[in-house]
Every structure is written in structure tokens, then in C-alpha cells.
Image (cartoon, rainbow, N blue to C red; front, side):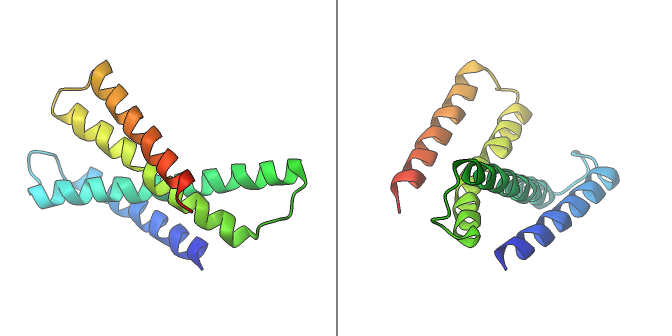
Length: 124
């Protein structure tokens, strides 16, 4: 069920984001519209990263030959990791939109992602 909801929401986010990018400009859209664009980017990244991590985890599970966990558990864990990792593109776009993207800012975002993934890995 999670996979179907995630696939549909990713597809809807892609369609809505494409329509918004074609019909508006950053200077003509309301601030809530810009927030909606960032939310759609997050949803799109969440769906893509979830299925990417899920595919990698299934491939690694197949190579190792282990059958300990079900595919639903693997999808749920992939979703949790992707929810943390999909915030990075939104932060990168947000920081670069105000003209402050440099090495220091990139390293701060990378450190945040590493700490967040470490927390998710240790929190079971």
C-alpha cells in the first residue's frame, strides 16, 4: 500500500511541478506558491529516492542471498531514509536561491544529512 501511495504522490508532484514551472515565474507567484514548489520538489525527491534505495536494498539482499526481512519492511526503511535524504535538494535550492551557496554551506548540509542518517540507523 505504501508503494502505491508513494508512486501516485510522486507522479502527481511531477505533474503539478511541471505545470507550475511552465505557467508561472518566480516574480509573479505568491510566497505560498513558492513554498508549494519547494514542497513538490520534496515529494518528488522523496518518491524517487525511496524507490532508488529500495531497489538497491533488494539487489543487495539478492546478492547476499538473505531472506530475513519482508519487502514491506525494506520499503518502509527505504522510505524513512529517503525522507531524510530528500530534504537535501530542497535545502540546496533554497540556499542557492538567496545567493549564499558555497563550500561551507554545502558541508553544513552534508553534515546534517550524515547526522540525520546516523540517527535513523540507530533509532529502531
